[in-house]
Image 1: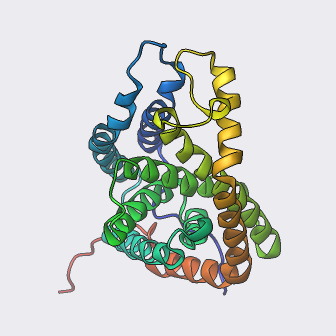
Image 2: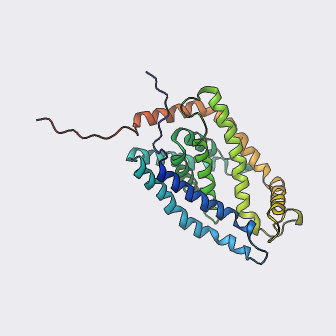
Image 3: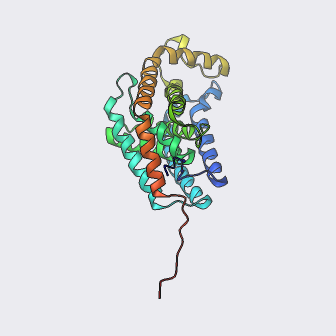
Length: 274
């Protein structure tokens, strides 16, 4: 029988939800605190957030895995799949070399998050971005923010509706639409990381410390439209195209691998035959 059920090696239990909620809350604060800072604040300190965020992110990622082990169990097969997919994602990223926003790894991250679930997806997205930074020499203050943003992309794919019933072309269209939206949102969130302390901008799109949040957000939208939309839209187009073209084969391979690995099969020990 061809069983096409989705099997998630990292399912969400209460501890996993708490760990993901904590790391998400820390990420939101790390990205957005300058918007609420007073005019007298030293916003140059935002450029120095990265080491502290990276120091907090690694144990929190470990905490997600440990919480999952405590909730539902996690074995070496799931860790091996995490390593393989993270290596594949890291290898795909340099293919576009960031040219015009073309990043082929996005489609694999979206499909993997869909098949393997939000908890696994968040860890996979963060680890893949970390590995790709080491591979391409892209280590810098932006890296922990990229790890968080990609983790959210994969986690969101795992939270899409109908994981056990939606199949075929309809599923591909849903994943393509999500991939397009998440590609643009990824670029927008990463803009928020650097925009408050980039000097030399035109007055109409620059951050003004102490101004109302609404006014600064208006300038931020103008900044995104003027500077990064030309990268975000090609990233979205490539993600949709690859999801529709390669999605059926990749989804089938991932689901076959999870079924054969039997992540959710309980381990039993039988006495030796006499």
